[in-house]
Length: 274
Image (cartoon, rainbow, N blue to C red; front, side, top):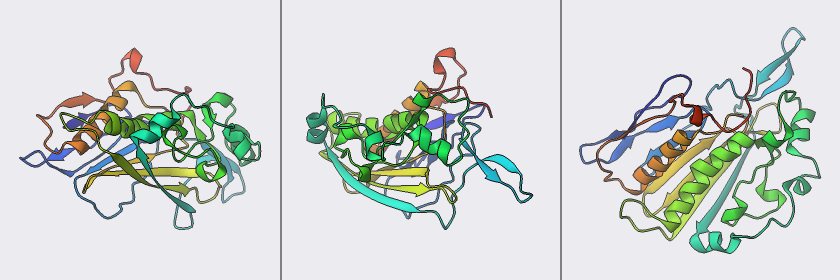
């Protein structure tokens, strides 16, 4: 499978050996989502969150004492929060039609994600409140607890949609549908981490690594401060990614243009000025 791209969306080739097995791969979509595939466990690799014009900016003071707007960064001093959970088909079925016992705002001292970001210097004057969320680490619909240990202070609606499309939907499909004649798996184990920004107490990136079977995994890096949501074709790319990860003997290579420019391919989320 290979991905072609144009414009701001970036994609790297997903390569195969003659037998069709994956040996080197990861792709970066326009909203900063990084999807990595690996047929065998590998050492952790640091993946840089893309420098997208859709990333949130914060008020900071430069070396001359002037107030400027800049995107955040992470470094060796950044706080890292690890989390881990397992999802089964039964976990999802039990949550179908079940409402959350309380809103996320209540878990964060009744401070909304929007108000929290404004308080720490985010530039949100052109952004509606509905485009800022308080994110779960493990989705409530997939067995996640509705408590303070399972949420982070704030993220964009675009990154929430990215998590839905690139993390939660692949988990659901693996448990309920399988892929290309491969039966559904019994469980998906997720190892994740939240890397906070170096200078602000807000998530800079969230990394999910989905594990199933003996040596299959899919890693997705989410940019919580990126306003741009995924397009439908980027969602299709993610579906192909997990299908490849489930079936290492994938059929003949296919191509998918991640940035077609079609009117129906506008990303989810607000129009943000760069």
